[in-house]
Image 1 (spheres, rainbow, N blue to C red):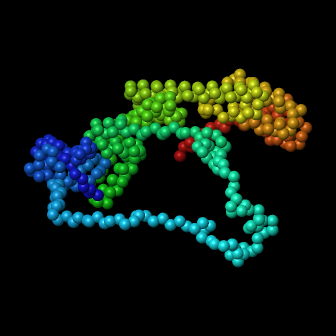
Image 2 (cartoon, rainbow, N blue to C red):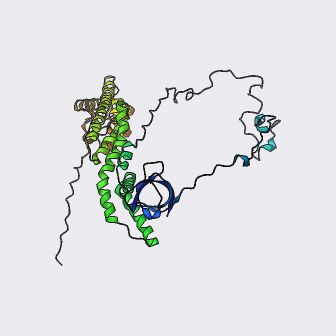
Image 3 (cartoon, rainbow, N blue to C red):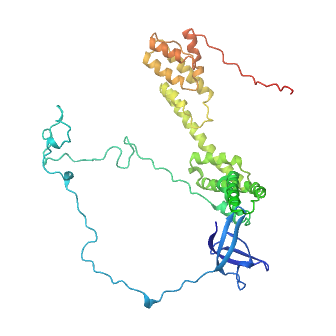
Length: 412
């Protein structure tokens, strides 16, 4: 579908071609045939062009001169005389108190709800008189006054990182007219977006009877431009994280490092990635040290259930509990799970152990003589193998590895 825009003639290549660009901008730009412009045209002229945008670039179909705007005659203007303002421009009317209802509420106005239930508060008894006021004070709840629910101070979130387009715009400025629309599609959605644009243009070409699209040539250019567009997109994503430094969020650091695996790096990108990876490693190590400290402090304080709860929530999926600390957790849990422990405490400890990563190394010292405790122990015997020995259960062997079944190819 043809569209219109104003373009500027930049230079004359030869007798048949002129270069152009969008009026007042660097992009888009391209080459047009001199037969569709005025013979008296000169570089710098601005004309109105009718064009079509395709996957190969922008095709200029026709041009005409830009009509200059005529200044209106001052004598033909109609002036509006200002009117005098006699009163306020806005009037405010307040609604009456009580929703507009005056007088006591009668029983027949209850909408057929029937008489008031017994034991409910009467309309006039137990209420303070109209002149009596409730004691004044701080009427804000625990979640007001700048604090979070529960009286905790409200945490101020860090501002989101700005979106950068510096490297992508710099890449687009270096491309030719035939590469520019392909690079734009690659930036939007990669090769899949280019194929979708080709399919849409092929459908339009068939409907209008136009020439077929040069699909193979376009895909060849897309394959050549794909590494450059990926690198420019990654740099635009990594630059705000690099500028934030140690203040960057953990998820932003991890996302940039993960995305670098699919990008062909240059020297600048490798240097940026090295700094971002160092920030990520330092943040993860600091979180791991705090995590281990929390587990150790809980064990030292005799809070084994809390320590098992902390060890189930590591700061990173790749974080593992140190071997010495894991052995200490398993030994403490095995000693405390004895027959003399109260059934409720034993069940709470069983739940914490079954959810922890050290459950297979825990050897309980005994089981209380209680039906509900023994039933819970039987249900958890699959996760804590040592419970099966105490209960006299047979531990089934692990299932054998399934061998790959190969189908024989019979001769025809």
